[in-house]
Length: 312
Image (spheres, rainbow, N blue to C red):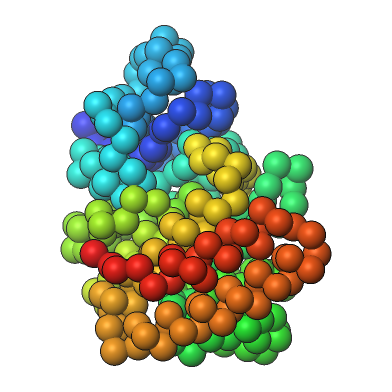
């Protein structure tokens, strides 16, 4: 085995997730050792730290001195941070992994094996579960004017509609089989190096949320395929580096969706805004009626100003 050649680069973005990052890295190191002992090649681990102030840097330097650590002076966000990591990586394959995502011992072996056995697959997402093993939705079809309408008015809850076009499927049955999809969650994205080289990674206009969907659109446009497999799973805590503010993800995802349509389907931007308006009005009413004021207030704020804001 060529000691200078790197088969897989694992890229982890860290931002004030010290306790999760330590668990994540412990598990990645075990997966790396298992991968290399099986004679499949070398694996490097890269951590991009987005100016953490919780002791993450000190912990990584002390416990994992062999890891390639790149501390930033400011928080670059998810898109820029991961792009930096991918630009520094030397691997033939790249794995983007959240710091609150925990791989199994054989995850790297199974990831590489899947792409080797399925040469038509360029980008792979695996099954995600919450701590405790509860199912977590993690992929879907690329947004279109039609499936955003289905999403806003819960039409994609119909299994047949979900199977054909759901942007945000959340039925467990949807994720039971391997399938070609439009996007997979950024918590785990395993890909051939040329996917990044040809598409240049995430659009850095995004700070966080929906950036993987937009990138997957360009990945598809470049002729690559994105697949989901439930044949192996990892734990993803979800939200390890974000606050408990329920409004923030809604605001950021809305910004991301609107930017996506401005960039890829500008003629349908007004149609999407109107759909979001009435879809959020429906959600406001449902949450207000059920007494969940934190969610109803968040959607009310989006109705008042978030949907109609000027885009970059």
